[in-house]
Length: 323
Image 1 (cartoon, one colour):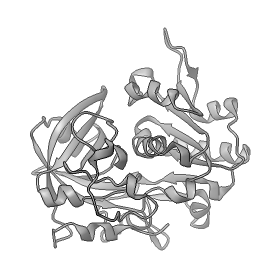
Image 2 (spheres, helix red, strand yellow):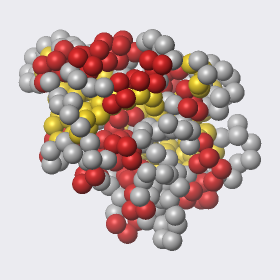
Image 3 (cartoon, one colour):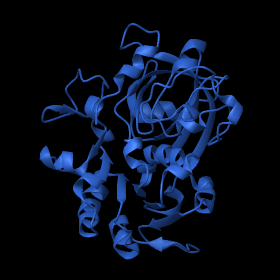
Image 4 (cartoon, one colour):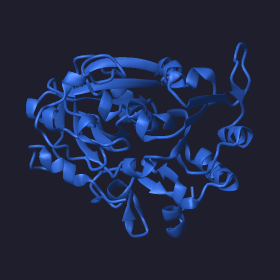
């Protein structure tokens, strides 16, 4: 999986450390400590040329507070206008422009005549995320990126897809899930397993019903402990996988969540018959600069921010990486 940082050459800033300005145009409270921010670039040229793949990330800065890494949580097929999760209308594409994102086709171009908006779902955890949570609609932030390789969309076509998420780990998967649903004919069955500590910690709850209504798509929700009026599954994600036994034939599993969840999920997937090269995960918690300069995210001879953040389990095994 090669780096796609060449995408950044489209954007006019010559200083790779200088962020582009973006305005917050909408905020959605997902859980008590997670908000989704919808952002649009204030520079029209940047808005019309910003291009990304599902699974890529940005560096978002609050001036005077600091900068942090966040995945882009909306699909490039749904970056249009106001509101959350809106599909792009057929007439919203920029005409006569060749897409510059590899496996995405022209009809999937994330560009529209009204420019691009992106969404970042942010959990309040420290100084920078606290500062972001205190921002309002109309406030300005800085954005660098997009960075990273993103998910191998072309390699997933014609496959059964198993999405396994824990907590805020659904954020990068949401981008790919909605991309796949908007190009439903390119993929076989889609199975989504999403877990959280409690029902109030489940993100994107208003999208679940739409996901379940899609053809050959199933959603399994689980919480760690049973609750009053809870009608879905109970137990940690690895246990749920053992119960539902998703097919491994012609399948790829995409996993994202807390390190401890991933650590115990990967052996279960192998036991179910998934091969190491058919298990994909992300290492988003191990990045800082996004440019391979600070050295914080190196694993062996690779940098998570440049060579990742998306890796197969086979790659991680070859690097002797441990969660």
